Image 1 (cartoon, helix red, strand yellow):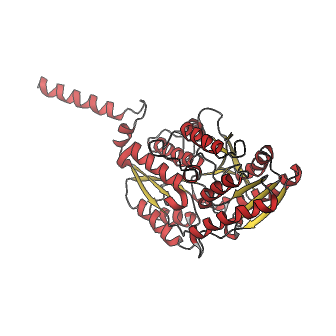
Image 2: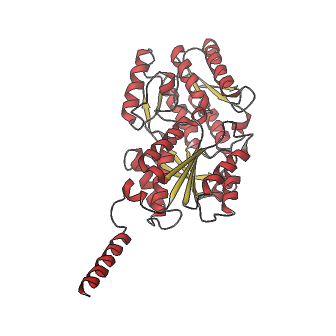
Length: 380
């Protein structure tokens, strides 16, 4: 009888310890929990940065992470995007989905999932739909501060010696509220600082010419623009797949490149400059140093730059880490700014490294769950 009582007491102690959640979380600890987190990103050709970030999270947390991608031609294949998100949610253990980039179709996908999984946590980054709409569907929305960039990019270009600013985009992107608003600020800031602003219509990578056609256009057009306006011309494109050819051509022409559409040491620079990322996927300092060396060797020091944070990777990683805290019961609700901001700043390099603000919508006003992120420049 005494042996039986001792066994019961030991079992109760084990159950009590299993219920404790005060200790620091580790990947091994998280894997023991009965939940998973889904991540949906672009493919390597449309969004390599977030794709690699998803791989990094899967490597860190193992089977707890499940991944999927949206199609390259997402603007015309929204049903595929929706079905891929629904497929992630079909696993009852998936309690949260991190969606980066939240391309057109994201809102419809969330609606479809919530028909059967109303409690699913959705964290969306790089939102491409109407801000008020996507914010009403998702629990948390993140975006680079494209409005703030409307001033910051031009000021950076001016510091680098720009006399002309070339803006590559196309109709689909210019229909996005934040991109359109940023363009207006680009024009106003250029006028204020005495820089000539020039719009150039590029092929839409989701159109008939595809990604390769859009990239070829950039390679051919940058030399034409430099010949016309001179080397003190700054270039900017609103599309991710255009960054590699744009960086390559700007360096060859000795022109100016203030930042990518999604600023990051990993976005466009490694492929354009033949820098191997293998073994350095999360080493920001290594990538900045390697890029700086390549730019200096190309004779263009001080005329190219980016942020010192991989912002799309940050959104994926912050989304996953926040989802873990949510699933572990460590947030006050689906949205806990103290937890979210702490995670973002930690990934960005420390307290105050990221400036975070709410999106201000002309019609809806301040959107409480839509966050804009702005970081500092790193000059090569």
